[in-house]
Image (cartoon, rainbow, N blue to C red; front, side, top):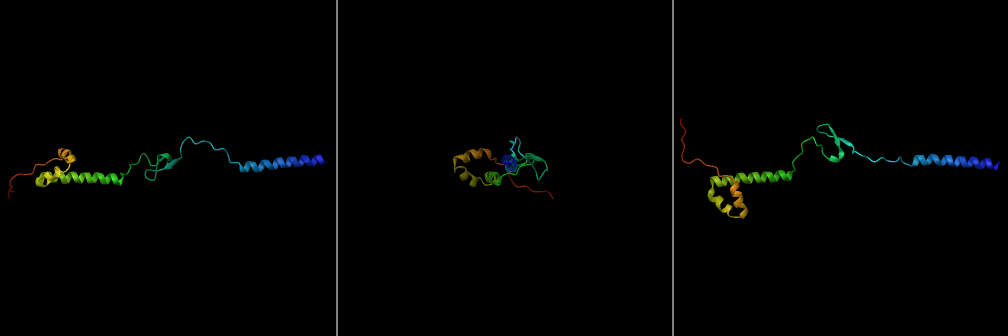
Length: 121
């Protein structure tokens, strides 16, 4: 009779050990070959999350780059106006730095009207 108790005990122990092991062990993870897809809030198209931004939507320009471009444009307009309308102020600026000599070649001098014009009535 002692053999039957041992057999039952061994069977019971083996069965009870298998059940908790299955619930505790996580399923083996498969390596992801593709990144998950994200939905773009603007165009409602899906794109891979690894891109960071939607490749179909236009990108915004960095504010620092926008500021630099605007500063260069304003400088170009001001220097062009000085060269055309107030050459007495422009000549000392032109001689301040060797870079200004190269800039002077790029900045146009617009022709201003010479003489007095009268508008017929």
